[in-house]
Each structure stands twice: as structure tokens, then as C-alpha cells.
Length: 331
Image (cartoon, rainbow, N blue to C red; front, side):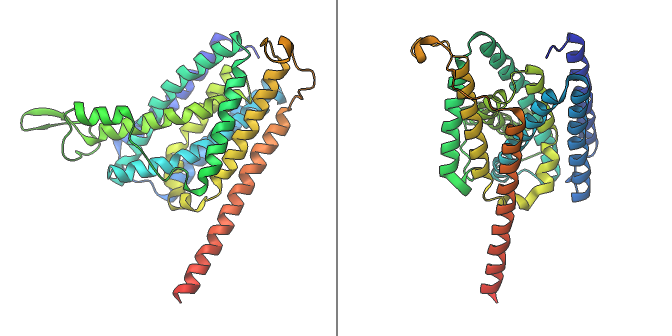
């Protein structure tokens, strides 16, 4: 897939315009969105992703479109898992509900910029060293095992990273919020509000999550353009999804198990690809492994979609049964 500089430029401009429009809407009227508003925005962003994939289908073929859809679905599902941590961060810092939209959007914009760097670095490594797939695949399998071990407790704990702790100590932080402002003047001194620390927490936390999501999507497609656009479309609808799901998040008790299966599958797929292109002297005497099977994109899409559907359905059924049992015990 050869993507010209013009196509890159048009894509970046179009996505930037959408994000700026979103930011202006929030800046003019900070509020807690209703279920209807959140549903409309989520539908809009999902529709954009589907239309973008359809455009790829018409211009580049079904295989490229399938890679985009699989990558987008994988990144979107991993982003839903991120929302658990976002909820904890908002509660930890007592962020007023009407200002949480701005926090999420700015944090997501920061994450997009940082992920862009990750994608560029990953693409450069892959183009030069095919053995990087061994590292990516092993890391994803390791992450999948840890995620499966944590089970439904995954994401329940949030530990402040080094940057957050440093900002608390080194920066002059005011005692309370002043709307959605980042700075405030107290006693004649300019100070940062806790909003800045919250944005740092959101941005850096999503960057940490990128450590598994970026290798995961490179396991689906090697095209930087598809990797970047899949990430952008997944993150663009994340803010509205946060408010739409709300209390539903704690009902997705098997989501972590589903994501563990997806990451493990992609990790195995990466290692198989590395074996098929092997040039490491200590693996099969430095020659490609002929028996390593190629996993087609339709199978990858089926596994990702099927696993997430089963995990979601099982979670909702289990949660519904637990609630009925609780109601029965109360009576």
C-alpha cells in the first residue's frame, strides 16, 4: 500500500478539523452530556470509521479495508478497557462531571501526539529489523497472561506514575478547581489547578496503555497509515463512550478475559510472522521457518469480533443474574 504525501496531508487536516470542532464545542459549553447526546456522538464517530473503511475498500481493496477494520476494532476494544482507569482517575481527583469532557478530550489529543511518535518508531524498527516481531509477540503474550490472571479486577487499581508525583511536588497547585481552567491566581501568585494534574494523569496513563495497543495493531497490519488512522478513530469516540457507558462499565466483568484472548492471539500471529521471515542466526540456523502458517486477515477479524462479542454477552448475562440474585436476597 503506497500512501502519497497528499493523502497523508488531507487525512491529517480532516482529522484535525474534526478534533478542533469537538474541542470548540466543549470549550463554549462545558457540561455533562446526556445519554442521547453521547449516543449521537458515538454513532457519528463509529459511522466515520465505517465510511473511512468503505473508502479504503473502494480505493485499495478488501484486504486493506479488512486490516483497518480489524485494527480499529482491536484498538477500540482496548480503549474501552482504558475507561475503567479513567473512571478511577476522575474519582480520585474529584473532577466535577461538567468538566470531565474537557479533561478527556485534551488527554486524548496528547495521547494521539505521543502515539504518533510510537507509531513512527515502530514502523522504522519493523522496516529495518523483522526480528522485532519476536519482541512484540512475546510482550503481547506476556500482557495477555497478566490480564487473564487479573481477571475482573483488572483496571480497579490506579497507581500514580513518576510524572504525576513529580507534578504534585514541584508545581504550585491550588487547593481547588476553578472551572476548567489550568491556572488560577491565589494571593497574588499564579498557580496551577488540580485540572493540570488530572490531564497529565489521563495523558500518561493512555500512553502506558499504548505499550500493548501499538504492538497489537502492528500484528494486524504493517502499514503506518492504517495503524495511525485506526488509532485516531478509536480514540476520537472515546470521550463520548465514557459518558455513554457510565455505570455499564462495571458490568463488563469478562472484558479483560476477552482482551487477553485477543492480545494472545495477535502475539502468536506476530511470532509466526517472525518465524516466516526469520533471519536470526540462533533460530532455525538463520533461515525462514517454512512450516509457519500465515493467518489471513479475515480470520483475525473473525477472532477479534467473535471473542469480544462472546465476552460482552457473557458479562451482561452474568451481571444480570447477579442483580436478580441480589434483589431476591433483599426481598
